Length: 151
Image (tube, rainbow, N blue to C red; front, side, top):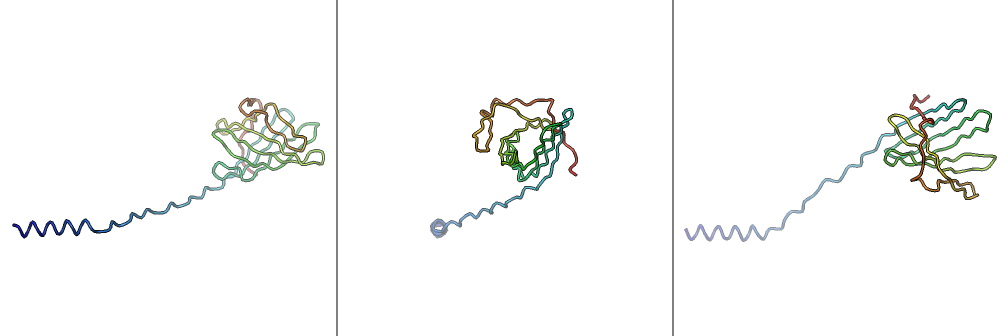
């Protein structure tokens, strides 16, 4: 019995002196978000707004925005930005009267459609126009850009 007790104590001592094996966790696998193409159009009387987006996750990696106004100058340009919650916030870069302009735009997602946001803006007189306070934007339900098939 004494031998069994001594043997058990030796096993415990040697077992306690073992270096613990480090725990190796698997490395996270980077999941690539698929690139989605979405297109929208709003017809407001004789005016048309067209928006084409290339989305990767919540990022608008590339896009086109075109305002075709009846009896006014059209403008068309590039769109890049982020979707934060249910709102697309982007920079719209276009040519106006021969000069490059960057204007901040916002669109609220309602179902499959977007409503364009309007609010007080600040012009820095160097081609940059931004909203004074995005928290006070109004989203007009008469200016709906409906999702359609990309052509």
